[in-house]
Image (cartoon, rainbow, N blue to C red; front, side, top):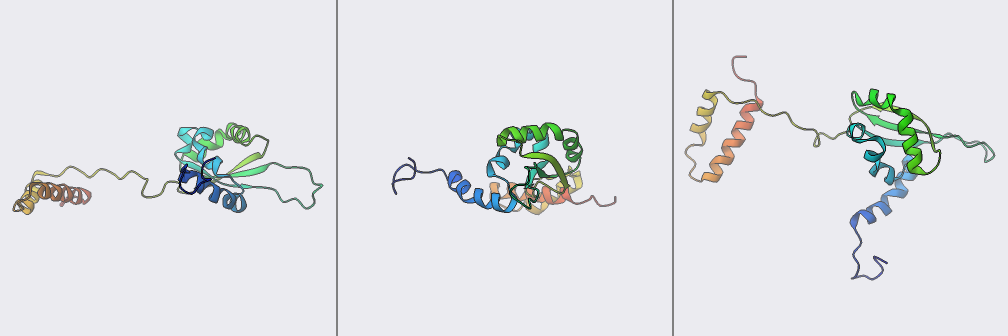
Length: 169
């Protein structure tokens, strides 16, 4: 009975967010937050890291008497994950239907677009500095008395210089 009393039994924020987001996702995208959260178990870690479910598109029914037709699951993919997903489409459909508990999805539509945000993408490591660049950096920060500040500025300078192309190339 979590959340009944105002000062007892705290409720996890994720439960509150799910309660708020789930109806919005169902209305806008026809998808539940549970499917999005469980995507890694459904698609597997290799596919899940480069894809995400976007929307479940249900076929339009003109009358209530029309027979049930399975929906199309629209999945955003990037790069080679789209090819892998295409080859494993049948297995992913079976897993999604098993997760949902009925034969809801009949096919997959793949959208190729970036899935990871720029923040989540690993940044390339800066190149190693030449001896001339190291000595120049040491001269610039050498007059700073605080050891911690000097070390931090030296790391910052090495990162900035390492991201630039070396002179003469």
